[in-house]
Length: 523
Image (cartoon, rainbow, N blue to C red; front, top):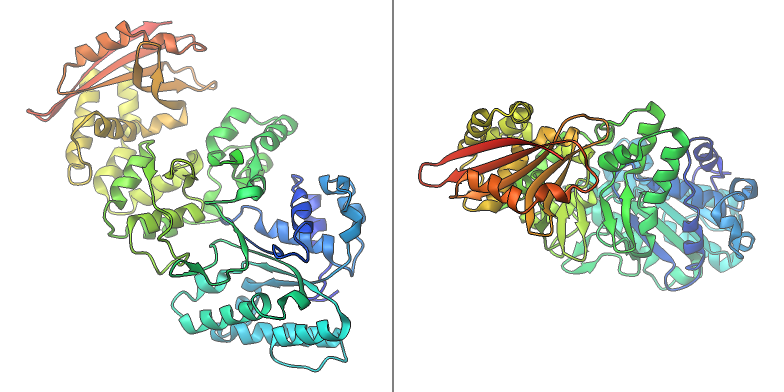
């Protein structure tokens, strides 16, 4: 076993000893690509979404220097008829790009250092092969002499683009190495398959990928690999049952990523952390500080601030993802920032509607932290005082509620376009941000006779009343309460029994004031 060639199965052994969810079906997918024109796979996901676990699993399965049968015998892959055919049959080269960056003192020498280290190890095994500083050339010579084809697994493939984002010469040197390996006339002779993983997809030049022969699976389009992005709904349900965790809470905190082939995907690291600590909380801060999010949302790009605020208010935003160059420096528009945030896991993407949204409570808290330190004083104040507004509502202090919303509106007139019930709805949702801890927010709940504007449905662990909020623009708030009653919005809460507060909120455009009426209703 070596450092780069055939590293063995120790990594996957340690993975199996912890809390493990069986994702070995990925091996069947890769097996079907071996030696074909689809043999080059690039998977991009956010930090802590299981990328390295996948590479360790693939190394353990294909590496011919070890016996991994017992590691896989109780996993899904063992039921595949081709399980034994490919098990431990290949020379595997494993490259962790962050390792080379951290062990080479001068990042400018990373690519030459990588080739020097790997070719030296290859030539110590294949002693009859002439040494050279070029990794593609050494692999080609080995393939020519022995007929062996390699499986190459690259973890954090995009680390150089992130760590040396201003060094275009180094980036081009790295791309030339990758092209030499995967886009040359000798690729088919020396490469059986490649699996690259990173945070960003392969960089574009214009509309073309720099490595066009790779099949890419991203947070925008995971395609057949959607179930391997994170934990599925069924997997989380089973974990919650096994470890005595509240599934509804897990869903609120960590669900929200949705794809055409997998409608519900959870943040895997956060689920594991919550189970290990026996507490639902924000574990995102252990993988990404709010500083990175703060930097991007503070870029002075048209419409970006409005988009962030509306999503904090529970809205979704239309987006064009095609202009993003998969490069953290080539950001020229609101949509480029939002697309990057999808790749970083801060936003989820609905590919059918071409919309982005904040996926769950954990990520919403990170946005809240970033906004509070971003200089958006009006919104920051609204988020900080939302507890007070909720308390005023629960004690039915309508005057205090109207005054609180007035303050939020006046503090944000430069940020928010305030001209209809939709914009009023956004302000109300931000004003009641604190309610997300104990309530599930439902927009436009159908009642059979119309739609209630906003409903806050209390979660199981709280004894607080449900809130039905009806909004009126340039109309009486009494009319809002009357509409709630006439259209039987309370009846739409079919599974809820308990106290309900009917909240009518109106805005008078002439006097620029809000009014509020609150009534109690027992269902």
